[in-house]
Length: 391
Image (cartoon, rainbow, N blue to C red; front, side, top):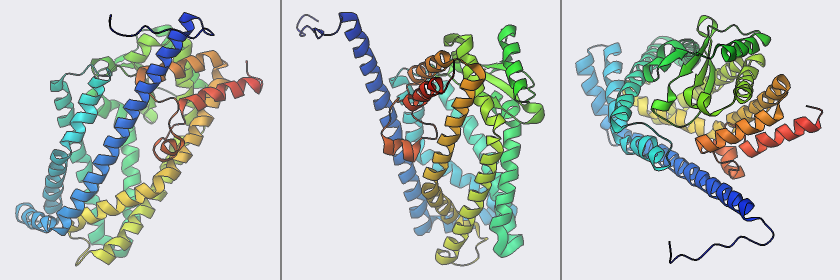
């Protein structure tokens, strides 16, 4: 505009270099702002949810709901089903502002979403239905075990949750993902053949390579190596296919294959099972201190949820540190497999730009909330690989 002061590049930099640096600085600032808003929304929703559960229980709301659930449900199974459905519905309505702003408004504000409001609402309905089914199954199992196994209910419940997690991982690419995204066989057969061959190098048999229609809803790029056994397949977002070169896609897949090669899925499952057991055991102690009456009474479910939330908050920095270490190893494996540090770096930078990731989050934020290392550190690893003799 005419009234705005003219910007002058420093004499030590060419004008084009100054413009490029200014653009990078603006992009980095936008990514930091986006990540900061997401973090505060997450913390706000977490605090609000915990406070709502505590007030609901202490004010007698849970006792009243349990009484109504017993009248409608008529038996223990029906009581748990009615109570859980009502609790989830009420919780979803209370946290709807966070879901709307974080899942719809924020993504549009930062030009990351292609989704219509109607499409977002429909996805929320489908997500709630799945949450109702899966949470209902787990709750029924936990309370059945509380009634049947007494003091050792937490160990049996942890075993059930581990088995249920395996089942969900098995059905994820064939049942859950298609509910939200259209999947089609990848038409680029040379690329698909290359990716299948890469999977074969680590001994992984895949059903096929599939294209996920992410672009109908988001501009973000993603890829996955999902499923078990007969459901294992390679999933590539159309947003990734449209903006990444074949070598960059191969690097991204090589990173995912590394987790299979290092058995990270099984390691994470074992660690998750142990932490679930520990969290349920700690919650059992917590319930015996604060709950009045039979622990198998569903009215104490908010206390159990609060106990598990508190345990997760305490242990999550450790699990995220474990995850970041595994991601570093996977990056190194990807570099060894593809021998292409340039494609690795360009893929990381494209992911940062397309997904609006903060390249250099604050160390405290990274330690507490990130399960992947900062992208700047991951790119630096490529430099270390080159110095170690990579080509």
